[in-house]
Image (tube, rainbow, N blue to C red; front, side, top):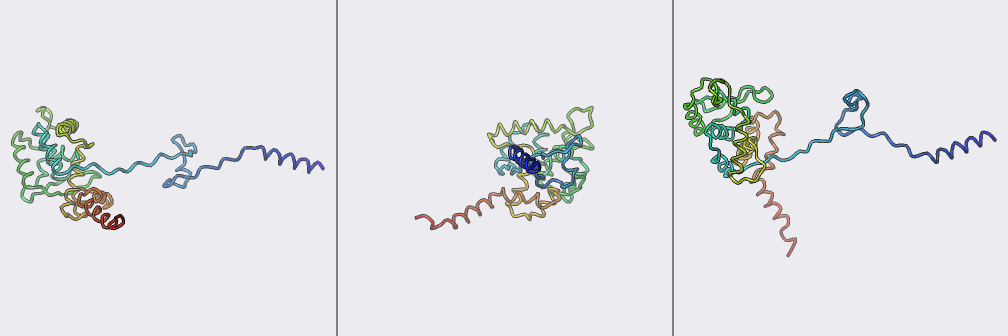
Length: 241
């Protein structure tokens, strides 16, 4: 009898208990090991950092690039920004260009120790080569193509000054896109792809380790947009009177 009473009492208590909260599952993409679920203090953590949003980069048309560059009034900034667009360079790659990296005979630009410590060569348009030679004659620095204007410093000019000049030029040109100096590199890749240059070649010019990184520009070309629009129009033709 006592056993039955104890059993009934235990059952009634369990009915009144709140439901158990299941342990959270590991986040997608996180490590299944215990180490992957520890916080900074080594304590177990049930939370994961939110995934980063993947947004398409901003791209300027060739006409918009021309309008922006025309509004850059200091020569050293205008020449450097034009070179960044003409060769698809990153900001620091453009600012830190050295005289020895110009191969005028072969019309190539050697990028030494780019992102990830990789060297690469990119085509140097003849008009850009002529522009760089003319700019170098204004200062004749033996090392830097874009030296600091302070004569006491044998250093390249600062990237922050060029960023300010670019933002001012975008505003003066009436461009309402959220463009940065890096937008010139995105625009370079997109315009090459629109002109029919092979994606693998563009990948080598940009110094991307993976073709997946370069493939994002296929979503940005006006040719792709036009082809998609044409396909959609054919798909929907005849569906409505």
